[in-house]
Structures are given as structure tokens and as C-alpha cells.
Image (cartoon, rainbow, N blue to C red; front, side, top):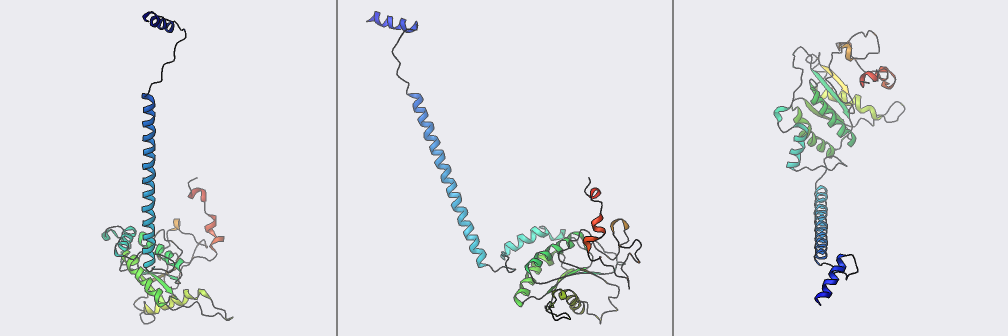
Amino acid sequence: NNGSNSHTSQSSDSGGPHKPQPPLQFPQCRRRRVTLLCVFVSMSTVFVLIQFASQHSIARKQTRKQQQREEPIFPGHSVHTGERSMRLRRETLLGSSSSSLPSSKFTNASIPKHHTVFSTSCAPQQHWESMVFFYHAYKVGQPGTVTRITSGCSDKEQKEQQTFFDNYIKPMRPNDFFIHFTPDYSRIQKSDGAPYKYMNKPYGLRHWMEDYLKLPQSSAAIDDDIVVLMDPDMILLRPLTFDFSDVENQLFVEDEPRTRMVRHGFPISQQDGYLNNEWMRLDRQHILGK
């Protein structure tokens, strides 16, 4: 037996035939452990994802229920009206410190008082347009007062508008920003008997002048005041004042206008049909830096 074992060993060493060795058990055990670990990690990940999705779904349902319980400020606009939500929205718009709010940049007493007004209806689109207008007036420091003339609101809409203005618009410049409500003048008929919706603008302006400026009784007191009439879809990129003498930043239809400053008997307005005048002939390459 000892010789046979020795011969087998020698034959194996010399490359001859030999019996196959049984496979080791340790690598198989290791593979099984790794597989089980991967399965456990995968199941844990799936469980966490399912739990997260479930909690997110529950949170969304609770948010929708809360929104349904709260009456929107504007028809068609869902707005949280809780005290914390309103505070956060004000801080987002104005900054966390009210001391950082700028007032008008024009404080020289020699500058006439300015009244910037813009006319709107009670349509939802003109609500957010008005907010953008006020915000940019605040950012550039538009001098004097800024007033939204709002025409044709129902009693409910007027209350909603006043609440929104008091909470979000007025804090920007409490002494200068106003909202003024008027009747609906869009039903006034033209000479042909058809209603003309743009009547809100002239008649709303007259209502504001009589009610706020107290014209004609106060004519002598406000004789030198400047009224700037704009639209809600306009955005102020810099203060708009009575002085247009800065020839580098103004465009006039005439080569030599009769005046470059608003004064008695000499108002200034933008030409209608702005898509076919000097605005369309600007040096775009220079403006865009190309």
C-alpha cells in the first residue's frame, strides 16, 4: 500500500492521470452569503422607497385638503392664508427685515410730486401683473405715489383685493403704494351703441383724480404735481420722472422736441404703434455686446 500511494503521487507529479479532487466548500458558502446580503440590501432599499413614496403621497393629500379648506385670495388662485404662510411670503418678497426697504430715491424738494397710476380690471391676469408692477416700482425707487386703479370688482373681489394689497403690496412702501376701486366703466357705450371695455382707463383715472386728488377743488394745491399714466403689463427698469433731458437714454420722434421736461401745457407721451418706430431700429448688436 505504501508503494502504491507513492506511485500515484509520482504519476501525478509527472503529469500522468490522477483522480479529480473534490471541490472546496468555502467559496460556495461565500457566494451564498454575498447573494443573501445583496437580496437583503435590495429588499431594504425597496422597503425604504415604498415607505418614502407612501409618506409623500399622504403629505400631498393633506396639502390638497388644506388648500381646499382655505378660500383662495384670487378666484382661480389657490393661496395659503395662514399667518405663518403670509409671513413667509412677505419675507420672500421684501426680505426678512423691514428696515431694508428702500423709499423713493428722489427726496429733493424741488422735484414736483409724482403720482404714478395704472388702470386694471379685476381679471386674475391683471392681479399678478399689478404685483410685478408694484415690485419693480419698489426696486427702482419710483418717486411719489404709485396707485393701482381697479375697476369693476364685485364686493367679494374688492375685499379679496384689499386683503392681498394690505398684506403683500403696501408693506413695500406703506406711505406711497395705494389701490383705488372704481365702478365698472367698460359697459359705457360708444356712439354706435356698442360697449367699449377700454373706458375703464379714462373714466377710472377721472374717478381717482376726483376722489383722491380732490379735483377740481384742490387745483391750486397740486397745480405742479406730475401724473404718470401707465399700464399693468409694463415694468419699470429705472425711475420714470418728469425730466427727459438725458439725451443718451431717451428716444424722441422729433429731432428737436418742443420740450424734454413735463411742464404746464407740455405733457410727454409715448407714440402709439411702438412696433413701427425707433424702438425697432435700435443697434441690437451693440446692445447685446456682439
